Image (cartoon, rainbow, N blue to C red; front, top):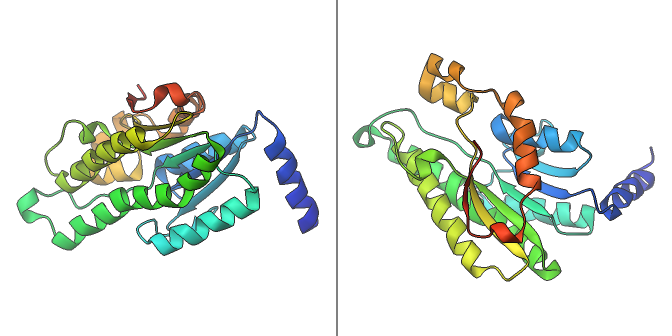
Length: 231
């Protein structure tokens, strides 16, 4: 198909009220990848980014300049802001007690898991504000509401995501919403890295993605400020 016809086809899909424009960070692996694949299979327009260019835009969410360039490309391509912004990109450190954690590894976790969320908000939310609608979903964790040994940097980053989500919710005008979402404990590569063989007892991203897609597609302004859990 010629480039002009492809663009016209995308714009025709955008005009359909049943099709949502969805931005997801962290779509080259784990939950972000599974959710993006599910939403695309349902006919929604998904713009994803990750640490590799495999099936997504290669973007380091910890670098605002990269996120900004990506956002400009997405907004220009769609000629409209996203209906859903899902901040899913995240990393962890080696499982060690806090007194043994590498300071540089801690800084990297905070740069990706916390600053990366704000970078996407800064890049995409102004366009959502101009339209007056949209939902921001910041993927959190049960460990961002409780805590756990050996994963202190990750827990701290998710506590920060909870705080950022609540602050953003207070700042948004009527018509928009920001929520944090604990996706449940899922057998991802990150969980296997942390739990080892114990991760096998939890659901896979493939079995989780349908329920997750239903959940995020059902979010609206009435959910603003909530700390949600996908059980």
